[in-house]
Image 1 (cartoon, helix red, strand yellow):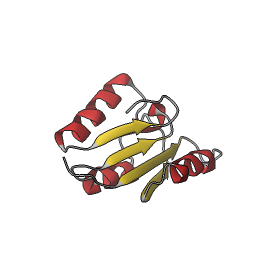
Image 2 (cartoon, one colour; image 1 turned 90 degrees about the vertical axis):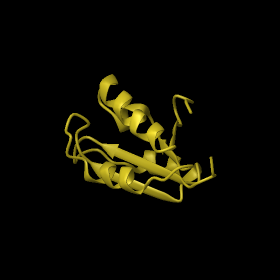
Image 3 (cartoon, rainbow, N blue to C red; image 1 turned 135 degrees about the vertical axis):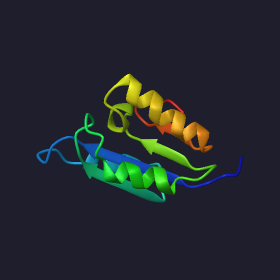
Image 4 (cartoon, rainbow, N blue to C red; image 1 turned 90 degrees about the horizontal axis):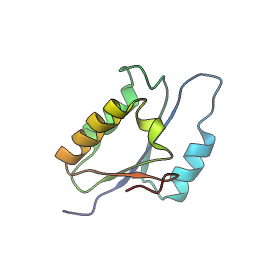
Length: 99
């Protein structure tokens, strides 16, 4: 598998929350691109996540601060990671130390 880009994804659920802690961590992880949005994890309408999925290529690594920023439920997490796997895209969580 070719070595690709580090792609960050940051999400908060409400307008009152801020992504700055996530963004700082993703920048320290040297992400070349960071997608961020304010949307509930329970909603399927997450346009930035869809853009990330459209742009991620084989060899890329999607980096999240925590897994709950990527998915609200275990089912969502399994489905999303399955999509990544099908495309040859790796997943890394910074706080859970999972990759």
